[in-house]
Image 1 (tube, one colour):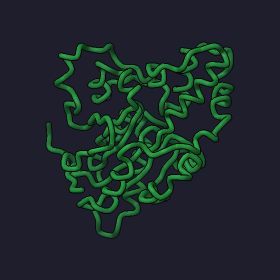
Image 2 (cartoon, one colour):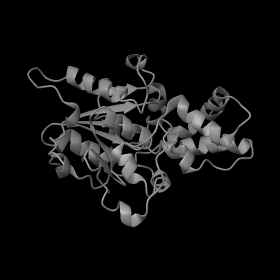
Image 3 (cartoon, one colour):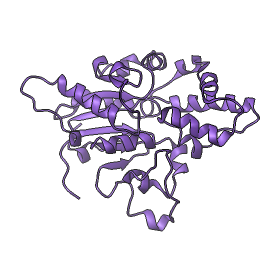
Image 4 (cartoon, one colour):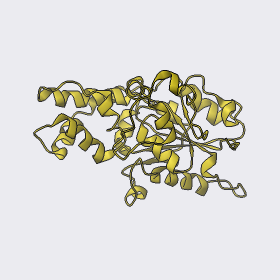
Length: 272
């Protein structure tokens, strides 16, 4: 495995990575499913829905066999946004952001790159503005921003490449541009992991416990980027066969973390 350069920029997803909104999304989806007598969405299906836009909704509909259209389902799920005002930051987020923004050496540039809507993000984080204030507004990109209109969503790399371009455009005079390999993407979804890989960036995969359980025995395939466009990966392998793969991909580009607490700064060439 080749030696990788120190990290100079960190790009964060938001839902399920910075804030606990994925649990609330599950509740809203389940309410719609219950209307039709269906059980809660299992993580094996939710895994193929996260961060995949309309294709993700189609994946849910293919499983649920609901007697409504994709647009009707999306409208029902989006009807009640009030519960999202109760979002909280996930464990380790506050400390990590503070360390990266104020105490990391060398200087680390921070950005947010989310497939979601900008205004919806503001609603979900209206009580969390102080924690997230270390990421400048101009370094936040969302799926409905003008710069994304002609871009593809995750698992395509577009949003992360747009984010890097914005960071580079704002660098102080004389500072050399940040390379993709000097970026660390923080993601909870498999689509985000794949998008980070395709952008040529390193990735910290921090999945929800339910998602991690759904991919048990196949984690190494997620780390390696062996995921199809619908979020499917190959069959699981026995525990004794997978130990050599975890928690780092064989090329060193993707690392599995169960939490942002105790982040391994030194592994990325940083001093907290």
